[in-house]
Image 1 (cartoon, one colour):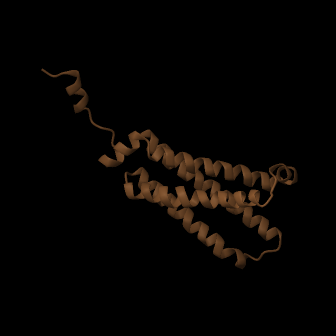
Image 2 (cartoon, rainbow, N blue to C red):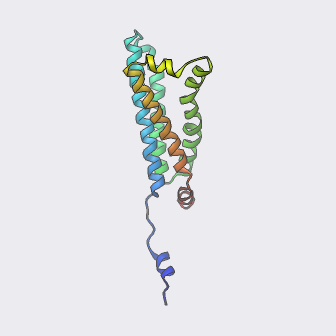
Image 3 (cartoon, rainbow, N blue to C red):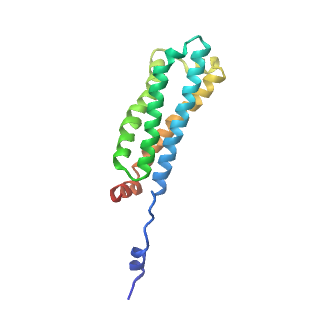
Length: 158
């Protein structure tokens, strides 16, 4: 005699990641997209202020490397790689988040005023700020989702 519990355990398990892992990967990709957008804005502003392309190449090259690594890690994480999940959490979840907030925090600590900044902001500054907030939100959301109970169980079984 087969019980309902026995029938449930015989059902094929889904082969893909649980929704929280899939959502985390999409948030990482969104964070990369925001970072690319911010880079384009920053490079455009620097060029309009007279910087040379040669001067901007090292910074842009580093960003391209980080963005590429983030995409590859997010895809590996979505595929079940726990080392990719941990690498994303430590490198971009911790150090990446710090890199996003240290400048604004220092600016505030040195007497910067949000009201004055908002009053003097042009369209590019507003676009950058909105993108940075979305970027930070995507990173924090991705890290949170990657360590939800369903995600933890899936990574243990993967």
